[in-house]
Image (cartoon, rainbow, N blue to C red; front, side, top):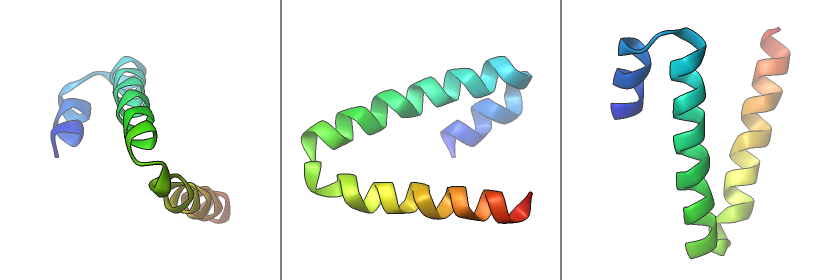
Length: 56
């Protein structure tokens, strides 16, 4: 919800790029701490990419 709030309050590409960077760091930390979650996360990413391709 915090991410969404920052994106709504932010402005365009800059806000999206900042949030992407924040998520990249958080997910990188999570994967180092919990390598068992790498594959389930990769599956979520694949599914999201497939859905985005289908919607285009």
